[in-house]
Length: 181
Image (tube, rainbow, N blue to C red; front, top):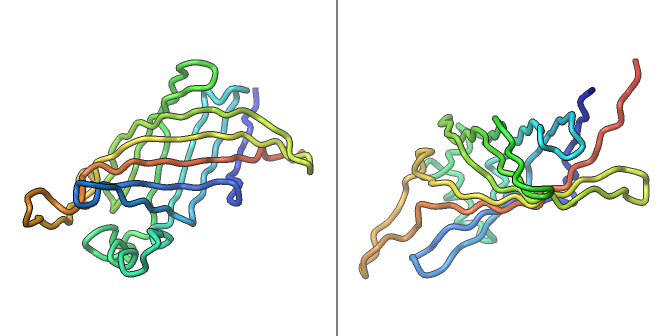
């Protein structure tokens, strides 16, 4: 069976995160520039190979001063490490619309295995005849595993930032039409 390639529908996809702030609430952010390429031979994505590239400088937390701080050496060091990379290593099918996606995530040249939960939301054909597939992806990583350890102690005890970063993404892929040679 030949492989089917799927590309990211950028106008219908988003990649976000949340991290504890002051240990009492969470700050949300997103990356506006990222790409996901998928290849599969099955109709249900159970053998999908996924590669995602995230442009670090596209981080947005709705606060330009904080975004600049996140781009510097205390956090992502975006000028030296402009991209984060995810490459899948295995897909585990839980049921017809739930998967666990295993892969290697590289941030700041540090690669660690991660596990993501994926909800397959189905296929649809848009008004122009394009076949689309939708997914909700969630997970959690520890930022210190990737060398992002900046923090500040609070006078009331505790620290300014949590270690765990929750990942949440809505991904829509477009089936690529095979070109005959």
